[in-house]
Length: 151
Image 1 (tube, rainbow, N blue to C red):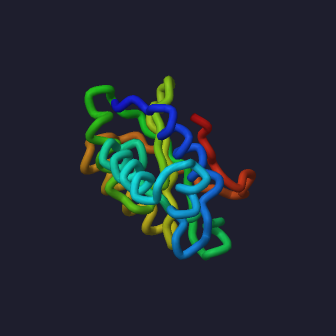
Image 2 (image 1 turned 90 degrees about the horizontal axis):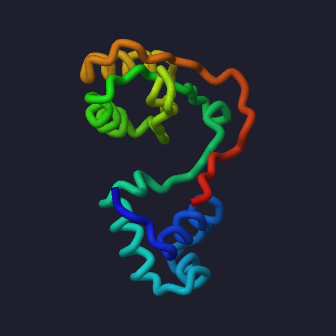
């Protein structure tokens, strides 16, 4: 896993909570971070290649857009974690995932336009990875407005 230097840590902390809505957001961010726009874009692209950043996108309330969200928990054998996370990361509907020290050791969120698409996708993931136990814990009420991870 790549080591995150201080400047990249600052970039990651900033873009999670203060991403400008502007035709040139990276220019504005670069000024705040005391970088050139090109250097910021290069650093972000490298962090994407290093898998430190999976995607950059808006954070919307799924229910207000007619979407459904669910928290999923899976019992993944240690030797299948790499395959499992690679498989779920291939779904654009997966916003993030993380490993926990628990019987259900891989957790992820899945947001889709229908409950049926979520069900079908989880079945595909299970079949592709041979991981049988994936809990589907649909959101019934939203209690947070964002997930930010201070580094």
